[in-house]
Amino acid sequence: MREASSDISIGKKEVAKDLINQILELGGSLMYWRLPNSDEKTLIICNSGASVRDEITLEGSMPGFAFAPFNPTKGKYFFHADLVFRFKNDEIVDGPDINNTAFFSKRVESAKEKKSQLFYSSQTKNEIITVFSALVEACIQKTESGQIEKIVPSKFTDIDLPENFDVVKTFDKLCEKHPNAFVSLVTSPETGTWIGASPELLVSVDAQEKFRTIALAGTQKQLPNVNPKSVAWTQKEIEEQALVSRYIINCFKKIRVREYVEHGPHTVVAGSLLHLRTDYEVNMNEINFPQLGSVMLKLLHPTSAVCGMPLEPSIDFLQNNEGYDREFYGGFLGPVGFESESKLFVNLRCMQIFETKARIYAGAGVTADSVVEKEVEEVEMKIMTLSQILNS
Image (cartoon, rainbow, N blue to C red; front, top):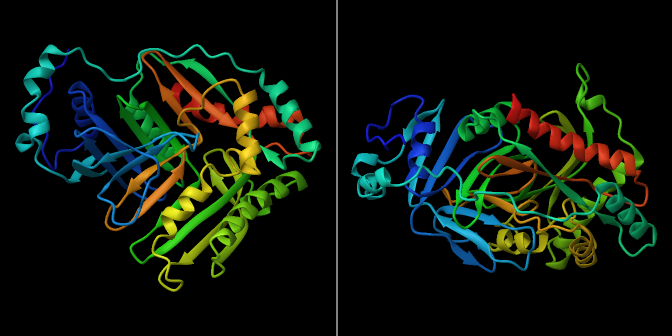
């Protein structure tokens, strides 16, 4: 086993991979991410252990990283940013000197005795899941009955990791292929290892007290040499996206927020796929609502884009019919309290990494106008987007 080296210092190029491997060898928990349209990457080490919370609070939070499962009744993990490193072009531009950091200096010797543990989950779980086409058909029948407007069934596919699999290189490929996405790597004993490129902002609160969220729904493949602005959408896709927008507006109404700005819907690119997106913004100072971020986070999760509408019957249907535990797929994740800003994203376009396999998750919005074959095709397109990254 390669011993943890101690020669990493600020200014050394191509250091991200070595630093992350050291953290994993030492049994540390790490969160590594790149915000949309940014050239900076952030890495935090949490050596104090994750805290489990009923809800994530954004106001006055110490810097850290939130990671929440799809099921809103389950505990949500918060990892304190005990050590923070920032990278540009794989070079550390800000961070502590690890040679004078207790996490590294006190545990280097113990690392020599440990087997290198790159991932915290050694094997995939055996799940009994419904045939996806049959699940979609059941969702259509449920929406046709009028009891539910929209349901978002999902599935997963297990694929073998390539022999030369490198989690940091995979992260960098996701950054390259998905410049508009939130690209993340989360690995800890409590959560296992997850990596993904989410196109969907759930909640953002910036230093100017501006709250933001988006409605994202509808999917089609991006064709070469076709301007996204000229893409046509079907009535089903337009209505599906409108349901997500309506869900957000209903959340505003519940807390009597009427002063919001709405932009869209417009077509956006997410890797090799296209979606319809509507943006919402609220000036929290103007409406004197400093807790809006935390309140909306609780109301929005899980959104109708990953669950359905209305919320409660959609969750019940999925838990009774989907046949497997989504764990963190469809949950949310992101940095909290960094430079007075918090940015949480829906955990989409993601995969869970095991010792020899990757489990890729994807779902599709089903309404009464859905066609089984098209929904199955959409999910396979989303899975292929990630599997191609792994095998490229």
